[in-house]
Length: 418
Image (tube, rainbow, N blue to C red):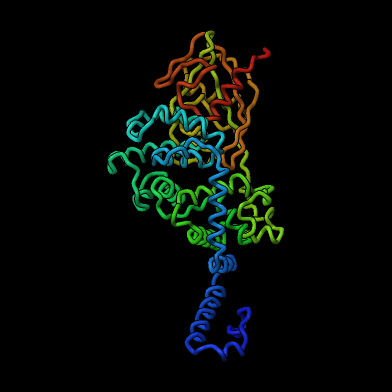
């Protein structure tokens, strides 16, 4: 351990001798304790402690909150702090961009204005309003949570972290966001935007999800949290990451806390955080059958059930989001032949069907890259099948369907050259 009495600016052996023993002891203890903390913690947390030891933290908070107050985006869920609306927005914004989520949020609220109305709604109606946002387990968990809130919390989103985390679809980040914004609970959020901001502030290199970096970033977020206004503080950090401290081309000149950013000082803002290695893409080919009668009506099958076990690369039911769909299979070798065999199993009375290929479509779900080969069958009368529904091919909005099914319908609607 170095001579800690000599590390403080302006501190010399002479001035040491002129001080009282009590002052010497207090200074020695303080410096020794600071050295212990900064030498035993990760580098980025040590730099944070240095910032906390001065008035710069107060200035940091003041600058960020002032920027947020002046430049925050006018988003519909920010116009009040109703817990239901905050909760709905946080769920919708998972894996979905703000611009895409806004119209869904407004339509969803119009149909389900309260937790009670969401809890009592038919599940298929909830999915229909969610259709197009993707990741449909969010909608299913949202309704399950609403039902629990009505049954156990008198229709009001719970105010404790433990109770919030017990709800379906609520994780650590989501609980912190809802409780801090709606109830001003002192819980710091850590999502991708916030993690990127904090990593750049302290020039944290490497994969943020490995080697224990994420828990340390959570500690950093909790330490920086402004206890006077945790809701605005969390939103300010998220807003900074979403609008200025973006993954590519961060706008450091406009950043309200640029003076505190180590990555900017080192010229590393554009390379932090390190990009995560993506999982290898799995290529899948699906074939879908679209019946079309003279009135332009088609046939959709009810939500499929996932198979118990399968050696196939694709769980077709999952790729269809377990929603209403056209007859669809995974293709192994010959799309038309395999789809004919599947069609015969579904409709054994149909024979001599003429399969007309439609333009292929492309779709992506997580690490799956999907090629869809739709086939049209023009038929005088739609076949009957238990639980199946007939509706206009040009308007499938009365049933909840996935984006994959919507793409099949669009492809099948392209005029045939035959």
